[in-house]
Length: 118
Length: 110
Image (cartoon, rainbow over all chains, first blue to last red; front, top):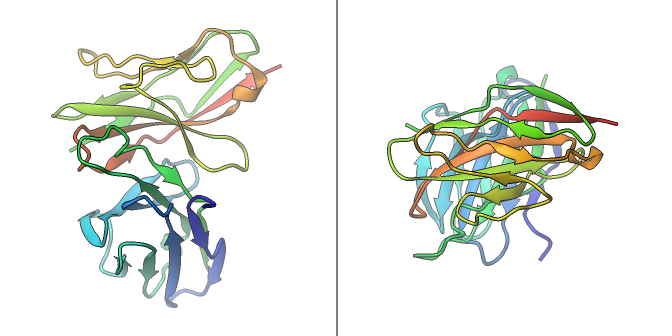
């Protein structure tokens, strides 16, 4: 296992185009998070999954953003009709949540997918 | 709502000097607090968490519920400590999202 993998590492697109990012978590981790990070800011929560269930989605996300984790393994984050304000680093993280375990909220991060919208 | 505040964007200290990175939080329930670190060109990674009560790379952090703080401390800074440090908060129990602060850049001057 090579840790959390994200693809692509860098995406340049024109305004109005759709983009999709993929995240492969650590195989035994059942929880998966998406964050967005812009320059000078900390990771901003977008959404997270417990297995295939999406438990919470940030109110900051517009309807242009959607995330899926259909089989409880990898996840995709799609941004439709991209805007220049969507330019950011999109981070994926995973953790292992077992009832009663103390490591549920310890996140392992991927390297991120950098989006540039022209 | 849960919120994490890191008041300093940049903290510069000389090598060998003590370090204190401030973190204050707002959370109505029982919190779980973390410090994450990002070294240059590396991934964000966990440094320590309050329930472990351990020292990692010489860093310690004590949860002060009265002052709602979780400051990160190290008695003698090393050059390799230069990095971005993020304080993070989650509700206890395992079914809560993790919220991050805006981060503090620690610069250790040789």
